[in-house]
Image (cartoon, rainbow, N blue to C red; front, side, top):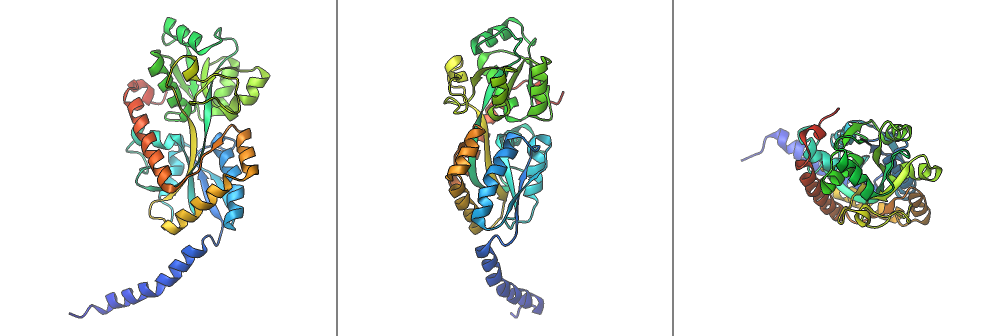
Length: 327
């Protein structure tokens, strides 16, 4: 049976376009690439994105331009990239918040696991558990004891529901068997301001946000949050060492593309990103921020995202309903 003339023409046109499409993928990129960050300029994610994008742009032969689209615990940026053209020219710098949002707010915006394609895990940065200097505690154990003696009396600050610091606090409360009251802010900078002023008493802050303040004595550090001691504060014990064995969390960063982006493009960005993460100057700049480079393949990053999603799902299920709502 003869095919309709319109179908024949469409088929011929598709065949004619295939070599051009393949050539476009092979020569990618031919124009600047945008890296969308879901947090404000100056945040740890923004700083990491700018450090890596400078070198990545050199390696790709086109500028990689960082664009901030903050709000809704990075969901605005995630949704924007998920809906972007699947050509590799709009990428996402995602953080731990994206895997948390999958469970915490499953029906809002894009689906992080299905609507985006992992490219590379950039690195991770520990949080630092800090308290206002006027709080009469000098260790994690003393903080836990005070919180147990005065349930719901201590105020902790965090940069939004589902943010890394917010979930670090939730994990801390669950493992320590304590309850503090949360005060949520648009970002870490505002949270730190209120901590210094004594309007809140406790905060889990990205290390890059508070390391300078620790040196000035305007905040008091108690511990870092990852399994190993923070390279930016090696004399500070971990929460696991100090009081809660097994406690381990930090803020990680990774690059993703819209799902359906050609694999050749994903592989090229992943390859050059891994090269960038071994560059001595990039490693040095990230180290100043307390960020440890990670790297790896897209498949490695996909497995990491799955593990993080499963992990935080268990924490979220154990959270009181009031801690899942804006205040």
